Length: 424
Ligand code: PMP
Image: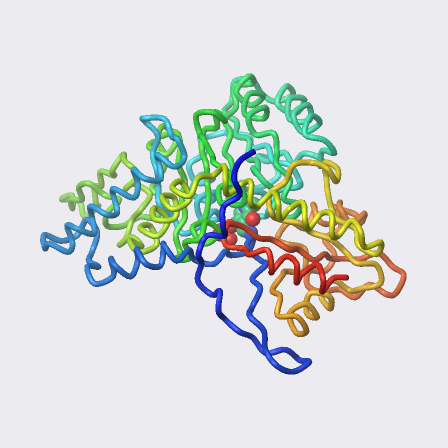
């Protein structure tokens, strides 16, 4: 019953692109899952701040103090956006990939890591070698995801530390994962859990406390704030005990040269421990601005609007016999505005190129940095390293890669209608 809001104003709405068939058309950005356009509000906030730009934590001047305040207030805004616990830390990073690599560098000695093979490579790869990582089979229902995890955790050394890494919404199928249930399973077996919210946070409210996850990672550029920043938020203990992610100024509290020539360092125990170097205050401010803009717009109406587009795309694609939509949990499974598909008789890369060249529509083709998942969904061998890129499927053979359409808070109905017309 929630009112569907108008699309939020984003940059790039008036960009026109040439068509190979002649003339030009306004660009339809339907690749939000890769990078979403900046919200106009984020751009306005950044532009208003820009003349006051100064160094963070490194200056007595007024603009430096102002920048430091904005930076630290942004931390509080993000903590509120994620509904963090009072003693959680919010660490600013470059991206989700950076956040998960930071957490990987902070794992306690002997930590076992559990990931599903369906994860984005940013969640699959940072944890180290095979001895430490257990890669779980792709589940075919959300319930199976939970039982698969429970079984794997029950088999582990119950006294050692363990971490589960799971996506909230798939960057390939858009499907929602049962995060709360997976967190409960992890905790019941004494493991911790990090949520890869790169695709969830732009589309759904994320509550660390309600989901009961230990950490959350997301990227600014997928949350309508494309200025090179990301977030890792959650439990302070592992982060505080870990070696600083980068060694340098800002992470160190005191540094002194000893008489024997060695250097003694006392590192910060706050988020600053992992934020050495001058931070990206514009990027951080932009993330906070996006968090505020989404909260003020109201996730209920944003979700209602996005879901109306999801159903239009689903219904439209389902009516085209040559199209197969990829899904792990079934066609009706709840999903965000991220939908991948293949078209019989078409190489996916050629199809995506035609959408761009003939219709001015920007989608993505390929394996979406989730090679084992896409291979499983296409019915090829998830264990076969194969070729990345744009392999040619001979006529009549199954596709080796897919096309992904993705959208969000700034997408007008017209873009989705143009996309469906073009596919038809
Ligand atoms: N996780 C998921 C689910 C993603 O979709 C992406 C980006 N495609 C990432 C992690 C990595 O994000 P980034 O490239 O911003 O580090």
